[in-house]
Amino acid sequence: MRNSATSLTRNGIADWLVQRVSAYILGIYFVVVLGFLVCNPGVGFDEWKAFMLATPMRIFTLLSLLALIGHSWVGMWTVLTDYVTVRQMGGNATFLRAVLLVGMVLANFVFLIWGIQILWGN
Image: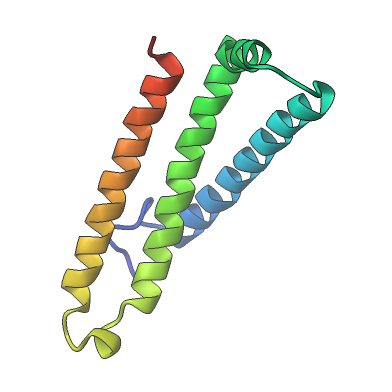
């Protein structure tokens, strides 16, 4: 079995599980938000704000944000390790893959901090 330092869990089965669980969380979040919009036609800003600022919805949104980050990391790591290869890049695949993965880490970190600030800031 091949272990990689950049894999989320260093275990393919656990990464697969992270991908599937995070997909379910994101799907449920989508259904909840869509359900709110369907049950409240013509929803205004005040109703939307009250819905999103409710503590359970804030927690669920934060959980969904974390799920999105885990889902994107496993997905992008898989794509980059499968498709950015030495044969395609002429020997520079490891460097390019590292740069792209660092970019993903930075983007996910910025999205997490930004999401927390939006959810729990003033």
